[in-house]
Length: 242
Length: 242
DNA sequence: CGCCTGGTTGACCACTATCAAGGTTAGTGG
DNA sequence: CCACTAACCTTGATAGTGGTCAACCAGGCG
Image (cartoon, rainbow over the protein chains, first blue to last red):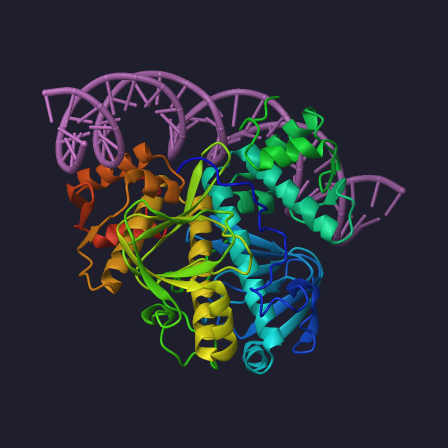
């Protein structure tokens, strides 16, 4: 009951299909919803929508990075997800957005009217399948994040984050040896349930141990990928010693 | 950027519909999928499936409570969700279950072959809509849990949990004045990202302050609902003082 | 009766938050 | 071009929340 299950692939970062009958189409985030909506531009720090706003539009990121987060009344913030090219934002059965969406960089997004999406979902199975796949992927990411927030140490959280960013970069054609972080230390901290000081300290430790290098704060080079992977999955010691 | 958004209802515990076109049917978890699958019984502590198993079946709880969780290699556990009557289990676009599902009580469940569900989703929009609503609700719950795990204090986590259990009980006809917890303190702790000792201590504090009463460990009476609600939403002091 | 699981409480302490200071970078205007 | 400013980043010192370890209790069951 308490041992780990059999060896399995984390669903994170793989594009799922839906069963057999719906599994024939293209992966969800390679397809564009541009035909249903209109492409728009936003500049860094723009807010696409606020938590609690009526869900009138759904978005797909074309270029840039978006940050989705919830707030507590006293200002404590939890980032739910960073969205990259291809990711859908605002897919919910509810009538109000469950999070705020901020642009971390200048953006190109497809904006789709919710009512139009509904119509297209009714008439086009392919669209429906893509929506289903996108929600399912979002759920899978959230469930992995629950494990991270509930049970992983600070070092493991940062390692998991870097690992996810590496895989994201590889999906976009990177070699997995270096990544560019468009978000601040505070954004990372609010994603990982830590403070920005703790994120800094873990990164400094990783640097001191020769696992990463940081030519500048937003650029990270991966010198020893294995240590990062193992720490991310909770296999190594929970604490990286200096 | 850091102030709370406008006043909004947490999506948790409300049954969503999907937009306008798909919003006409019954709420997802009032409907039974019994017609597509077969009703089965399981006894407490049975495992429905393991994380990483191939997704051959999907389940709907008819009676009893199921616990869904992920494990790290060293045995650290994160409970993703407790499932009650009406809840769907195993809806994922992936081919492997993302969590293990254990029976916390004796169960009656509907077991549906994944391939059968796929077929019915193709032929019956109503089934499709219900699946979409169920996944969407699961996502909404997970996103609220991210905020809990990432940013709430131990007291706030326990208060949120009790509040959710109260609302669950009310959905099943309870008066909101008392709840029965089918799970152990360890299960609660693994759900809230705490230890069982901390859960005990918070409950003892709530008891000492006259907010709850515990005639026995699995039965909790709510004496001052307001304090619980406010603490759950992060409005009170983060720490309940003894 | 004795064992085992689960619950509770206490003592202690570690991990991470908090508070504080200083450094670096990017953007802006003179 | 340079000074000024404001974010952002980093590091240090200290403290606190919740974890760890331990002991004991209660109830159920063989």
